[in-house]
Amino acid sequence: MRKLTACEFITIDGVIQNEENDGDGFKHGGWFFPYADEASGAVIQERLAKPVDLLLGRKTFEGWETYWPTHSNFWPNVMTATKYVASNTRNSSDWQPSVFLSGDLAGRVSELKQTDGPDIHVFGSANMLQTLFKADLVDALELMTIPVTLGQGKRLFQDGSIPAAFKVTTSQIAPKGIISATYERDGDVKSGSPQIEEDDER
Image (cartoon, rainbow, N blue to C red; front, side, top):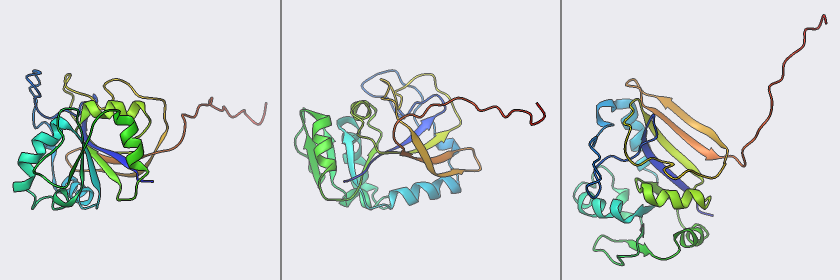
């Protein structure tokens, strides 16, 4: 089965939005750039070098299809990866290979994960991610947490999520404070109570 990973820059208060969408009043575009350094850049390059396909919301895709074809020297794989696009209003693009998914998104993505091919990464696409979280279709998170709070903007778990446990499989703190970590699904939420050791002399 193909693994689906959400890859995001995220603030301490959970915001992943980076630019204004449809006049929504977001005013903090580019908030992660001041914290970039050589160490965090190396993490980004390592992640972008993975041979994956992409699953994108329509708005994210429309921003990318005009940008990446002329900037792909930074990310060559973006040109060869199949771009699966969640959209009920579009069904084609000159930027290939692209496949448009309409209708029941959770069902379509569930079927997609069962097919042969590379793992699937999601970038941005905050609205689409809410559907994927609720349907328990996200297998891992690759997050780069930036030491800043914004107080506004679309969040990773904007509409909440199902209870789920994760384990950290990689982590790094860069000199300017970016925490890069990979979280893999680890079953259901576990609970327990603290164990207090009794004094042997009692």
